[in-house]
Length: 123
Image (cartoon, rainbow, N blue to C red; front, side, top):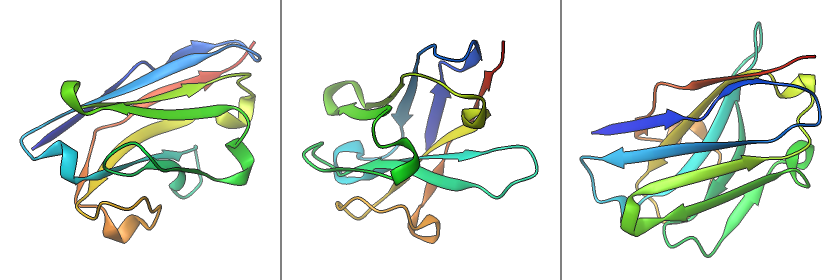
């Protein structure tokens, strides 16, 4: 089982990024996927999730108007587009999968975790 997150980098405030998460080793279409982030010195927090079919999504309030989650089950991939980046978005971003179809950001539900991709927002 593997979840490979990529797409992070150093971006100026106001910029955009598209994170990708490619899965292998499990039946991707049966799993909801979440994106989480951990900023320096802070606990990991959930930011967005998408159900197994892609028909339902959820965002925490702090990112609701700037983050867009999507998935392509044929490509076994999930994406997180981040617009209008701000310094508080600086964190390691992780994708994770849980075998319930419904979207949730309850971390204890998640079965598989990726290794994370660093996003740094700085001028």
